[in-house]
Length: 132
Image 1 (cartoon, rainbow, N blue to C red):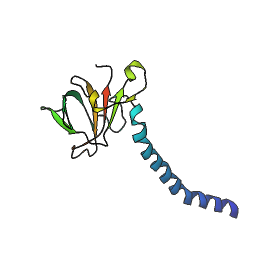
Image 2 (cartoon, rainbow, N blue to C red):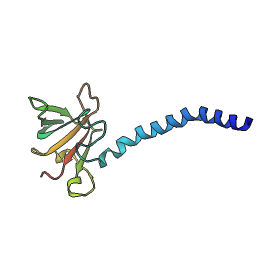
Image 3 (cartoon, rainbow, N blue to C red):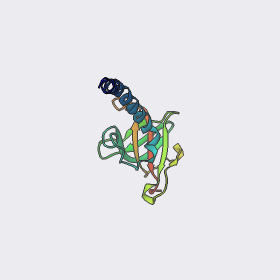
Image 4 (cartoon, helix red, strand yellow):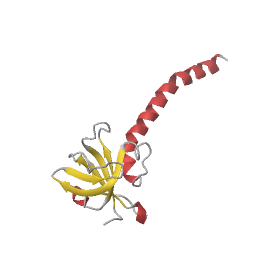
């Protein structure tokens, strides 16, 4: 009987540590897998911490996008750490690593800001590759 109590006690003490490790791993895994999630379908991001729109232009390091959610064109600063992905999920193909040269007027994009409250720099941008 004593041995069973010890095992239960150990389980109760190990549970928070294991749970913490699992949550930390999940949090670290999300940015690495984000590129594989289709445009507009990122859980917890799309429709909340990201903006959907259409590229109007790219000048210097500023991406200019129009979005039905905003009355005026929005500006988003691309920084060296900003990632660009070409979403080819509509063609049932894998997502490719893109470049700022892929940010052409008329292309549909999803933008995730590094700081959702300030919206001053881009963490990543997904470009709909189906729209030339």
